Structure formats: structure tokens, C-alpha cells
Image (cartoon, rainbow, N blue to C red; front, side, top):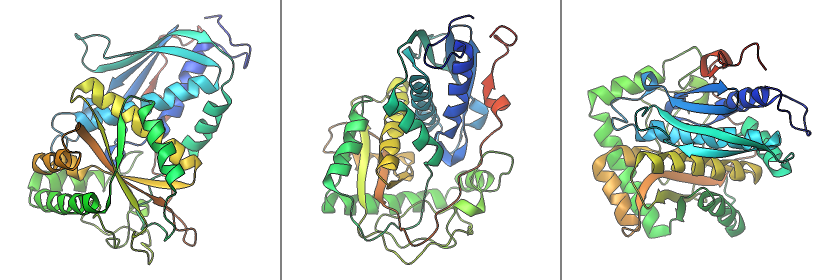
Length: 334
């Protein structure tokens, strides 16, 4: 392709490949990175990698779709930072259910400075499971995160104290249910014992369960990350939700999660997804009650200001670029 953007003077196919690679920074359930990109002369395709689906935890493929949605949003921002706008076709071909999205109709728009800042946030964003500091998150910050969510077609309900207690009870019950399931335990052991670019290493898991109002996932093995002395009393909690419970809505939920998390990162806010409560049907129904039936819950989130006095965890490992970005259709022709 000879198309070039005046902003960068880089071929379109190069920009597409770089955006796909940058999308690898996206969060995913258990750091499974269940996506594969295909660079075409004038488009970029996102496919789900079913081999990395958590069959016991996520049998319907909802969380794997949400994870891919986060990568899709990352890629969109990376393209905008390079000066490209794209039309997003979600679930474009019913005959190819693994094809989740196609970015097409690429147009040169000039570099988007806000997108450039978000790309910088992609590279520093991480999941910090330690208790947050005693500084509460400001209302303006929570509003900015909620607005970012709404901009991607989902909503974020910030919970009041009574709702937080309901969430805490649901999370505790979900943890008990999952701890009693041998298949779930084996799957968790697999993803916390991996090396080679995916999974959760000991460095990102707390040495002991943190003291927190809403219990996080019990990974069933101690990590090496010092938990710190905090208790999360200043944390806020929210539920990411939407009107529908379809593959497209779960994909959009992942895009919304990415948008919210990157805005939070820019504002110095720590976010931790709490997916256990949606993995268990009974506790997912409790979340619907917490939302007063307003929509379908996709994920719960802990939102707080990270403890500035203790070093946070490292970034989780990432798969090599060649394993997630297929450029065979354009190699030699860019």
C-alpha cells in the first residue's frame, strides 16, 4: 500500500501492525491475552483465540470477549495517535464467530493528542491488587471514569455503602463456590503457574490476602508482592453494566473497561476488576439486584488511589508480537 498519513509518513499497513502490537498491553482475564490480529492492506481484523478461553471459569466466552474488547479499544486509540480514524465493524460475519471486529475505511485525520496521551497510559497501566491508600477517590475523578465508560456504550454504577456490602457478600459467596469446584481450582492453578508470556506470575500476586472490604480472588497460592498495611476503607466500588447480554455487548463492555481504566491511569487511580461475582450465576443475579434490574452486569471494579509509600507490582508478561499479530497478508508489500 502506498497510503501514508502526512502526520507520520508511515505506510498504513505499518500503522495497523503497530496498533495491533500496542493492543497487546490490554488487560485480560488471568492475563490470557486471547486475541490475534490480522493486518490486511486496508483493514485490521481481530479474532478470538479459543485455545486461551477459560473453559471452567468462562464457559460462555463472555470474559474472553470482554478481554478482546479491551484490546480493540487499545488498537483504536493507537491508530488515532498515529493519525488514523477507522470504522469499527463488530461481529461482522455470522459465519465467522471467531472474527470479533474489523477496523476498516481507514481515513487520515491528523494525530490526536489525547489519544497519544492514552497510548502512554497503556504502557504504564497495570493491575495492583494491594490495598489502596487512605485517600478517597474524588467525585470529579469518578465522574471522569464513568463518562469514559459511557462514551463506549456501557455504564458504570458507583455503589453506595449498602450496595458495597451487598457486593462484598456476593464476592465472598462466589469465592466459596469457586473454591469448591475442582475444575475451577485446576484452571486457576494452570494460569497462575504459567511461564512464557501469559498467566499471572508470583510477582503480581500478594504474599497474603489483602485486608479489604470486598474480597478479591483467592489465587490459592501466595505470591511475592508485599500486600502492605492498608485496608481499602477509602476504596470506591462500581459495577460495569449495559442494556444487553450479547456477544457484541460484552465486546463493547471490554472497550468501555479499557476507556475507563486508561482515564483512571491518567488520573492516578488504581483499578482492579472483580470478575468472580459474574462468573457464578447466583452472584451475578445478586449484582442485577444491586443494579435494581437496570441492566446486565459485566464486571465489578475496585477503584482507589494507590498507596504511594510502597512499590507496586511489575507489569504482567506479554506474548511476543509475532504470536499475536499476523502480517503475512502484507509482508513485502508495505
